[in-house]
Length: 139
Length: 139
Length: 139
Length: 139
Image (tube, rainbow over all chains, first blue to last red; front, side, top):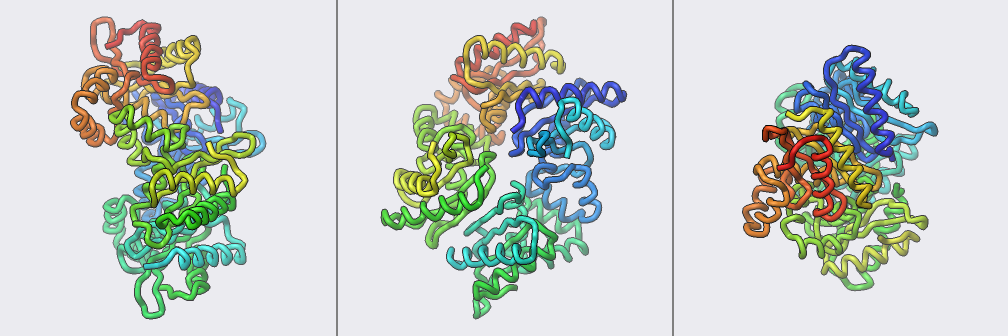
């Protein structure tokens, strides 16, 4: 399982990347491998519904074992199936880039990060930078 | 109503078929005719969200009286209608193959099986083999 | 995390203990350490609402890190607090004996078993026998 | 509204107080005045259900305009009423000490902090220390 210090390192580096890229205010959520909250930070100006979006990207990635970018591709191919999954999981599946699985050096799944606030591609870029800066691996 | 021993026989034979076919790890759920859990087995490596998917395939089949393959066809034809049903039933309708009604030799509805983990067509093939091996009838 | 084979062994031994004790039909649920379903068996004659009870005993034990017997004691002392937790977790906390944490020989938490169908004390006795028979540790 | 930097300061000081007091691992949640997540940190060893408890203490405080200690008193006096509120708000009201309103120097409500992991009195003591260390006011 991911430690709080690992989670905090990812949140800090993701936010720093967002500032470097000049992104909109971000919300960053870290879940453990069982899909439970470890850390959340919502930047000033990031709307109050954003934590649910970030959590939904991360939780969907964990539940399906792929990135939320891939979930977005699946939703384009099979929209009814993915909509049904979102309903089954009470919205804890948001099919858009920005939710990324986190693994240790041995490939063990530790959890997932979810980022929202800017374009999904940018959210994901910040998430990937955050995981790398923490010395962990995406995917 | 389906007995636990019938349910266990279907689960075992479905999983055996999955191994014979070389499928990904499977989750198999058996519901009684009222849509309530009788048996669940989630194989190692099958994601934690899978029981909800398997249950949703089986429960949708029972609620509508058709296979979840047919629900997938209905969702392609009438996506908003089916999305509304998924929401109304809190996701207990997943419109993709792998959910199959179970009947006895006289055609009496006993319950349903839901399978997930591989391609939907493969999930369904394993489910059908499981029902047949248990001496019961699909549909 | 608990394997499906470990989970099946606990279910089988719990049910066998129930038969030896002459208990009412039982429902047995195994959750992994993140609170997600691994295995369920509902014996013939065990009511259709029983899986939610068994899951609630096991999930409450995991969420609070104690047995559901202890949750029952807490509910006697602080009924409003425990009722609020049940609501927060959508009923996934049932404060009555029969939900027991499962650990390996090194004390690592693997998951939990929940049993319902007879008196809570008897449910718990069957659960404890199931864990022991599988070569694992309760608590 | 509370800023993320204010929220982070409260979380850090609350956790530091917990360590000074030798408390169990804590989970700390900060909500804005609308009851929405701003920051969450769950320490290693704090159970996965803890964020819901911390959020429920803070959210109940905001929804009723009093501390969650006071909500506990109300629950002792009027248990059915408070149980109904917990249900109405899907558990986002946990009637136990540890949820404290946060105000600025002028008395303007900024949000609330919720703490869980140790005895409720200790949770609250850590929360109060966190608010004070951040240069804000409890109540």
